[in-house]
Image 1 (cartoon, helix red, strand yellow):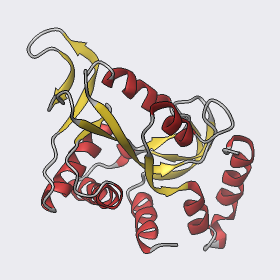
Image 2 (cartoon, helix red, strand yellow; image 1 turned 120 degrees about the vertical axis):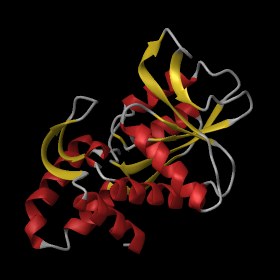
Image 3 (cartoon, one colour; image 1 turned 135 degrees about the vertical axis):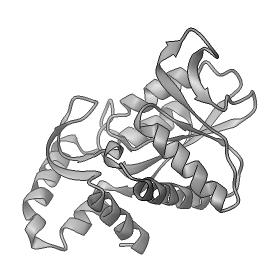
Image 4 (cartoon, helix red, strand yellow; image 1 turned 60 degrees about the vertical axis):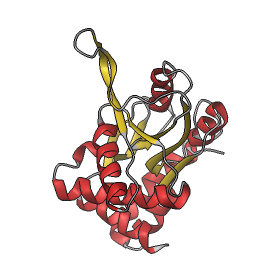
Length: 217
């Protein structure tokens, strides 16, 4: 396993972002592990997360100027931290996020922060994709921005699960909207990491059993 993947998984565990047990995903699926960016609660933690996203951005997109979009609520802090980390390395990108409910006074609308202009490219930064539900909601919101194109999405973990059909949710998103979805690690990286310690045998078995039913073909 690449060093940065190990470091990232260890970071997720230490920050309690990666948990094992019984959870319900936004898709409604009962899942044996959970990735929750909402558990990041300190300046040091969110700064570290932003550094991982910045590393992934430079690796996949390079130094291209885009606009970062963080879907409410967990994507907001990710967009802010990623933009700060990128700026520290010489790439100053604007960012914005959405409100859950449109504001009918003041500046109005559902977006807060920089409003992309026609011809500009947007990169979505999210915590995780399970069935693709949240990304489709984001695309519905972003469709109101005329002439703006989403060119990529970055998430912490690719769960390698089915979307609407048997294909992986991330593959379905790529095919449906025409942009790549990148992850820092995927569930098989997590399994590989867990298998190094026999004490994790139960969690490994539960995740593998879950993937046998819900994993992408």
